[in-house]
Image (cartoon, rainbow, N blue to C red; front, top):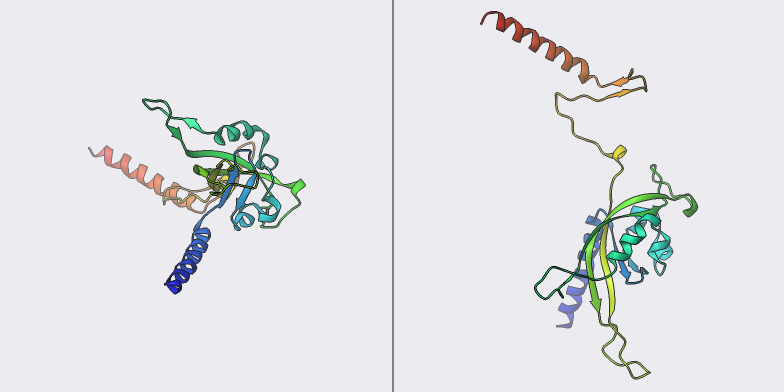
Length: 207
């Protein structure tokens, strides 16, 4: 029995490792005050910052000031629409700008040179019992409220590759709209459209 339990725990560890590798982002757990009490290891791959650098610090020290008001709102329970008006909404979904020390070339820079990376944060508010037994003072500690999130970076528009169909071509222009680059498909498409238009006009002459 003990062997089975050990096998299950080992399997769970492996699965958890695979889950983190499959994530495009990282796991973040915040207290009601905004302290980061847990971050998955892959935060370093996404943001350039390590678990050690972030754990125990306030999330407000690493996020954009303009996002703080919304973040504080997300960290509090909200009552949802119900007959009694007491049902609390636990789901969370919002966007957050966080400091990133990774450059476009994959290098890491100093925190003072960090840029802002947009994260899509989704998760839930959770309430955990801190301890079942009473502490030395004779009273039980209150439950701890946390926000558990999966934070996925939103790719910069310049890094997104859009699939182009056969009738679409890519071009770049200077400020006076002169061509600075043109996809080779441009000429092919223009010739094709010219021939098609010419053929259509010739056909109309006979109708």
